[in-house]
Image (cartoon, rainbow, N blue to C red; front, side):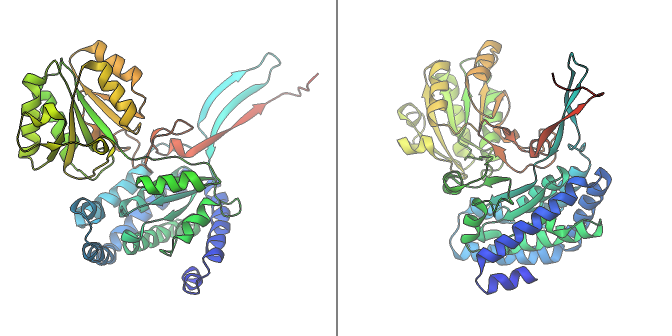
Amino acid sequence: MEALKLVDSGNITELMARMGRDARQAARRIALASPEQKNAALRAMATSIRARASDILAANAEDLAEAKAKGQTAAFIDRLVLNPQRLEAIAEAVESVADLPDPVGRVLAQFDRPNGLKIERVATPLGVIGVIFESRPNVTADAGALCLKAGNAAILRTGSDSFRTSVVIAEAMGEGLEKAGLPADAIRLVPTRDRAAVGAMLSGLNGNIDVIVPRGGKSLVARVQDEARVPVFAHLEGLNHVYVHEKADLEMAKKIVLNAKMRRTGVCGSAETLLVDSTCAETHLKPLVAMLLDADCAVRGDTATQAVDPRVTPATEEDWRTEYLDAIISVRVVDGLDEAIAHIETHGSHHTDSIVTDDAAAAERFFREVDSAIVLHNASTQFADGGEFGFGAEIGIATGRMHARGPVGVEQLTSFKYRIHGSGQTRP
């Protein structure tokens, strides 16, 4: 590949400028592609991913060996590892995007003016989307598929830990595009681990990147927000809470808390803090804590929580602000709904928070006052997922307040323009 030769020569600036130009040209063709052509490309991508399964899994084995040699945590390894079942799930996710309604050309609003003008607001592609993510090979496929469905081109930059795996997945997706008669440059993975490539993307590549989507840890998102010269769909860490209200059913609370924390500890929807109302602490706190500990989840608690089980270790102020992404949870007893909401507002990341209660008024107030992208009542935080929302795959969970918020699916990857139909009107 010519791009790889540029990397070998150390000319990152030239490589990235070329990728930006190529993506911009590809974006024009993708924006004009029919829904049928885009869907054919998505299905061809899924076929290519399956056909390249042995290559992808071999590359993943190399990435895993390197990660283990570096002493990465079990939770980190879980996010990185692929097996035949997970790879098939990636292919199925790409196919599921083809089954979604096409978001481009949707009429978002229409109205008539007194002068006879008929005005429509219509969904259009964003253009070229830069996605910067860490150690999750599935994001390569998810992000590329979603961007394509929404009529965009994508420049993908993966973390070094999943580099080999992501390269092969991206190659398979390029093959699918070409089989459908679309340019492979519409989905390109940056073919270098050099961090200078990130800086180049954040500069906007001479105006060729329209928006940046970061998906990773706090340091990555902070760098993107500090340096980006183009709009950003911020995906902050998932400092997610489950609040067990005084009127929570204990058995329901146990089921939700265990799932929210332990279903998959390394996903951004995993609960990191459990808040238990002081009014029900006498009956609810000990069973919840014991359940977590018996499931091999470390519990770091306040004084009241430490008192119910000797296996609980003291929580520090830092624990309330930590996204563990591991089998660890912090637990605190709070005096009512006011204190629970105040804790979430002070320590949370506006990602996903849940209340467990049989009190509809308390749930409604939680919905109204907790300013998070996703707020749940009597459900696990692990539903923070575009697939669970019916969006197909997702590019991330946006925690900002502009344009996109919550799961970023195909609809969130579009902008809009106004179409105005006249019959000879001129402005007086």
